[in-house]
Length: 261
Image (tube, rainbow, N blue to C red):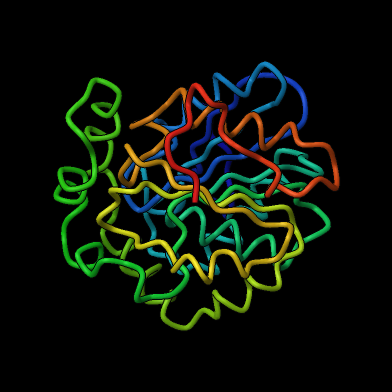
């Protein structure tokens, strides 16, 4: 287990591979661990990092759980690791943190992948704010060997960390941020996700040309676990796009594609 001390508190992270930096941020349920298949896939070309946000996994649980504090944690972690320009992949809560960081550090983020990203508070199921971490894991995780480690680690979360982020979500101008986003961005949604509702198709197609939206129709909230080969292929294709090329030119390979929206 790797840790770094930030503000005299423990932050747990893992790192794998060599190359350009790529950082993964987890959702409201789980920890860094469910990113391991994606980290292994990307580690051939990237130095991949994944950390536990405040209140989750093996990172400190001291109550500094606002989205601003999670964003500050990300900034201080990047500085502590000596990371320069990087790619960010955020999921659920991690997507919110990644977006807030990118809007303030545009020059540092090479590209952005946002998984299960709500466009407003109405796009988030209220059960996220009321159920315990263990109950959320039972609700959102399938019964498979791939999800078992995430199910075991989910109860480590401080419920207050989940609730604080959802409270902050109510005041964010997410649509404005997303429609003004200049960083190349790929949105990924699970068709069967009960916790986050994708935006209407007409809004998705009105996003900047630097953004693209894809739905994986056999996935729920965890497409990186539900359809691991397809998700990893999509991730690597996105990361491999030449600089300046719009992600709207990105398509799933035919052998992995069923529905693209």
